[in-house]
Structures are given as C-alpha cells and as structure tokens.
Length: 402
Image (cartoon, rainbow, N blue to C red; front, side):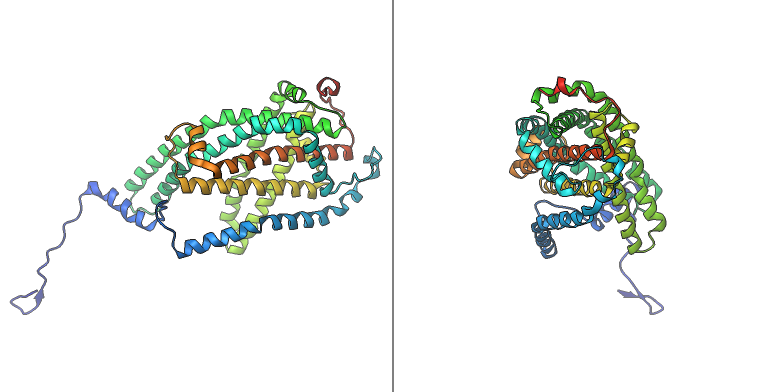
C-alpha cells in the first residue's frame, strides 16, 4: 500500500488479466465439476455414506418378511374373488382344492416346477443363464458411459453461455449414440434367447397344467411354430411401454406442485405400469398357446383378467419388484467395478469383473425369468377355465405332448 498526493491509499496490486477465450469452456467445466458429485471407487466412504449402507443392508434383511406380508395381504384381498364370477362362466365342476386364490396359483406353479424339472432345468442352465449373463454384461459395460451422458446433460444445464452448452450437448449426443450402438449389439441375442425361453416354458407349463406329459423335445418343437406370433406380440408390448414411459414425467411436470402430489402421481403411474405388464404378460401367453398375435393377443389377455384383476396385479407386482431388486443389485455392482465398455468381450466382463457376486445375480435373474413364465402360464390356464375354453385353434396336444 502507498499514499497518493491527495493522501488516499492506493493498492500496489495490479488487476489480474482475464483468461483467454479458448480456456473458458475448460475452466467452466472444471468449476461445475466441483459442484457435481463424482464417484471415486478408490475413495473410502464417509460417515454419512456408511450409515446409508448400513440402513440399506438392514432393509435388505427385511425383504423376505415384507414379501411374506405382501402375499398375506393380497391373499386376504383375493379371498372372495371367485364368488363374484357369474355361474354361466363356470363350465367345469371345480375339483377339491382348485380355488381362484393367489395361493392356489403359486402352489400349482411350484408343483409344475417340480413335475417339469427335467424340462425347466435344461432351459434354465442353457438358455436363461446366458440370457441373464448378457443382461449383466450390458449393465456393467454401459454403466460408465450412461453416467457420463447424465453428467454432461447436468453440466449443460448449468453453464452460462450458449456456446459452451452447445459444445457439451454435442459431446452428449455422441456418447448417447455410442450407448445406443452398445445396446444394439446385445439386443438381437437377448431377444432370441428370451423368445426361446418364453415359448419353451409356456408350452411345457400349459401342457402340464392340462394333465399331459410334455417333453423337452416337444417344448422346443413349439418354438418353430410360435416364434412369429411371439415376435409380433413383443413388438406391441414394447410399443405400449414406450408410449407410456413419458406419461408419468408429463403428469408430474403439470400437476406435481407439491411433494405429496408428486408421490401420488408416482404411485398411480407405478400401478398403471404394473397393470400394463400384467395384461401384456397374459397376451404373450395367449400368443404362444392360441392362434392370436399382436394387439389381438394383448386384448384377449386384458379380457381374461376380468374377475381376477387383483390376483393379476399382485403376481405382476411381485415379479416387477423382484426384477427391480435384481437390477438394482446389478447397477450397484457396476458402480463398484466401473467396467469400461471397451474392456473386452461380454463373457470377460461377467466372468472376470463380476466374480461370485455377478454370478449370484445371474442365477437369481435366470430363476426369476423361468418362474415368472411358469406362474403367468398357470394364471392364464385358470383364467381360461374361468371364462370358458377358447374357440380359437390351440396347438396340437397329441403331437407336442409326448
């Protein structure tokens, strides 16, 4: 500090020069990166993160109890479902123990699982496990790229100039295209395996529920005659889910003034999504067992749920919860491993990177896929008996059941 001639104090420090224009984007990105959360796998979690992990582990321990409680509550709700059916629709005398309760559906599904273990175990080992491994590999390899796209989108929303935002959006679009190409490489083999496992499990379960003795050969023989119908129905199912996906965000943006309204919209949207998955699951079974496909099969599945909507929603909700829980475990594993998309083949990413935790998730997902098709098929057979036999052509039982 020094004094001027007038006696006022003058600072000795000269004003710092402004940074060059070429460095503004990088400087702004570095400043915003400090504001955005960044995950470092090598860093140790803090006290708050440790408490969150402990609370998450405690919640996981109570998951079986919560599932049992949900089954009991849903059983109480569906206890009186069978009494509302008109007498004209009951074309068969009900055998002892064949009620329309959700417990009977689950018990019949377990009996068919043990009865058809010579069919379902090879399907689980040679089709469902590779399908689950592909799903885990896609989750592991796309996690880093997907998070990078999200971070770029968040960064583009907080920059101050259009030039910087345009550059960030351009990089985000390039990464999004790379992510789409990565998913397209997994789509074809995953779709083929899912079609095979769905047709084989649905065919063997439907024949076994009718008192026939299916074989592994007959289950795979139905793939040749049903794959086109299943493909057409799957396109309709994906289209319905794609059209419904922006609806919750649209409703939340318009009517979500308060957190209570947002939670209510989320709850209602989840219920509608579960209902859509319930009727589309029945439509997929209809496309395998009957001569229906596309929107006609989905419409028939929605009609079959009349009188048993609570049971259908309960079964679909349980499997949606299980698949979401397994998917959350896969994302958690991908976050811990931080696998690069160019690290190698899908088998390398599952075997070397996933380890024992990855294979546990693979087995759980494969078992959930097989079990879901068995339960939905049993539910379809019960709904078909309730509404009467189908007038449409069904696959030749004598030729397929050996």
